[in-house]
Amino acid sequence: MSSLDSQSPNMRSASSHKGLHALLAGLSGVDQVGAEARAAALGTRSIKKESKVWAIDTAISMVDLTTLEGADTVGKVTAMCSKALHPDPTNPSTPSVAAVCVYGDLVPAAREVVGDRIHVAAVATAFPSGRASLGVKLLDTREAVAAGADEIDMVIDRGAFLAGNFGKVFEEIVAIKEACGDAHLKVILETGELKTLDNVRKASWLAMKAGADFIKTSTGKVAPAATLPVTLVMLEAVRDYYTQTNVRIGVKAAGGIKTSKDAIKYLVVVNETVGDAWLTPDLFRFGASTLLNDLLQQRQKMLSGHYSGPDYATID
Image 1 (cartoon, rainbow, N blue to C red):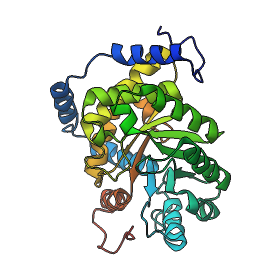
Image 2 (spheres, rainbow, N blue to C red):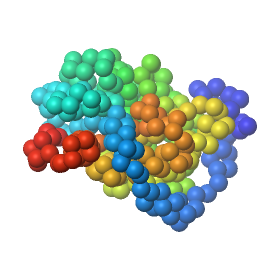
Image 3 (cartoon, helix red, strand yellow):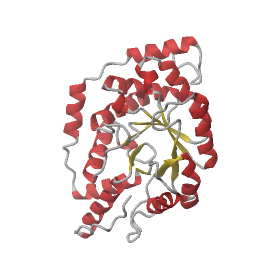
């Protein structure tokens, strides 16, 4: 058991920061070539037709349907939320998505449409850069929660992390978690800026120790976003954390996942790395804006034997 396990997650002393540094320094390095090879091998697994239908429905139920553009409007969010509740109005058996994800000022519009039927996630903490004072980040978070968000997607200070100032990153996550109240906290690592899989593993452990309910790959604004090797390393961290603490932490893969084929690869990696307990929207999510359309088209093909026309799915 590490020195952190016997202390409160809200610790702020210098000794606790030493313990955090010791924990992160003690993590085993990631074999990047091995991780990439394993992710590639798992991504080639084939599944039977019956399993594919289940996988598509599971993937739909895991989507955080997202719009995070400067040109977002109440009308666009309202339409997206209607689609989130009823992805295929012609087939009531189609599951709803897990959540919608919007900017904080559009949370009331989203909540008005979805009610309590699905989650409403808001990006906060100066998304996507994370460049703001802690006071601004806390206000951003509290306002989103007060407006009706029951999930907060925060971004870590990558500059502080890469400079080795792990204590600052840790304390910010702890503070944002407290500001969330009952809302769940997803911590965005922005793995495309962390450069190495070793850093991805360290950031994953740091976020989990600080109180994250989910760890999330990316904002979707930085390339590369989600990749199979990165997600594999995050899932391994979640698995090891569960082994030590008996606490399950979720993973959200966001950005660049556009096809059903891609989504199924991720589900295989989840199943093979952490087991089927994570094959639920409570523990795995896809952050996406266009993935849902392809999932719907593939679902129709599996059930009816033919693809829908190009205008069958709404444009996101």
